[in-house]
Image 1 (cartoon, rainbow, N blue to C red):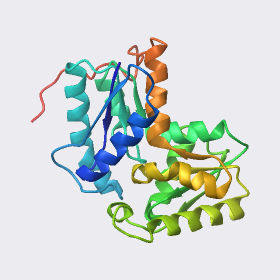
Image 2: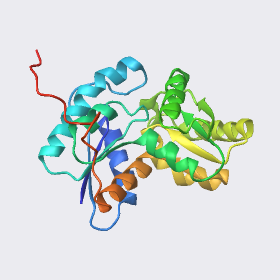
Image 3: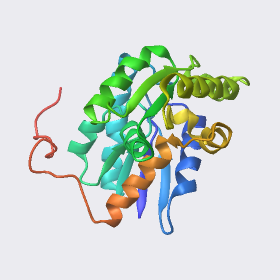
Image 4: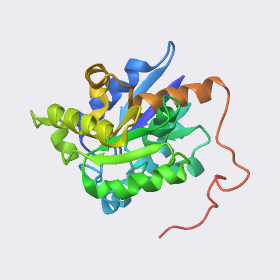
Length: 234
């Protein structure tokens, strides 16, 4: 089985981290490759960034379909281009926000999301409603660390830990969802310190794709996610 993990931003060091975290949970016989588009934003932190990232994501998905990959992960918490990718691909496509929030809903009555910048909070709530888990989401909280600084700021872990503690106290929730692919490597450490389940969407989405492939399931093509009609694009 081959799974492609697409980091929608162009920061190669983050792509490498995401790939390591995905490979760490993949089952026997599963090959995970992580890529990022050649063009697009260095980080995805706004609706504009998401729009600019989507063409690169779709190009990577299209190339992976031609190469025979069995499934795909979109490794950005906004799930940019997810629905368009499901139209484009026959193989299953899973976004990390959907996978993380659905997984967290199995683990307790409620969960809290801890993300990067406060400007993304509204979109996270929008996704929770779209995925049918808004009733389980007790709150969305920002640590105010820009995505690219997650790797470079020596205080980043302490700030994220404090934000998680505050979220648990304020929301009375049972689990934490990490709202950025750049936090994927912090999951186990945070869980040990907080004493609650901490869900990383990269791992959750990778295993969700693996599950779907092992079940022999592919994206339904009868209606909305049918292959886009052929037409000229100027």
